[in-house]
Length: 166
Image (cartoon, rainbow, N blue to C red; front, side, top):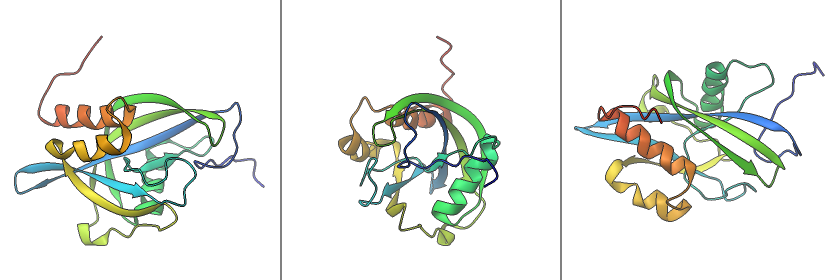
């Protein structure tokens, strides 16, 4: 063992601070901007069957954008361009016993849409969701969910809305 700590959403990390990164992978479909949302496998202990922004836990000492690219390749079988971070939130993972800080980045696919190959251990299906369809996700998570807020912020920024400074 090299001493590098690797995290996932289920391995115990009681009392630990964990850093995660997520990708707001967006694409224009005939003039309609959509975000890529995979559905977590129902075998997962943490948030089973929930749609989410793809990404995951960073290894100790790992560069955040390199870690995000690694997670996307592992989970979706595609490569992405990582843009700017635009949203940060925290949550407690009761399965792990940890506290996570999640940084959400804008991203686009390098690979073609047909190249998406979900890792069945992580995700069971995916959707490209337009902003007006976000109710499908809110019904699955709840309007106060920080990831839903991040998705709405991403759409707002894509439309040119200014940043909130306080």
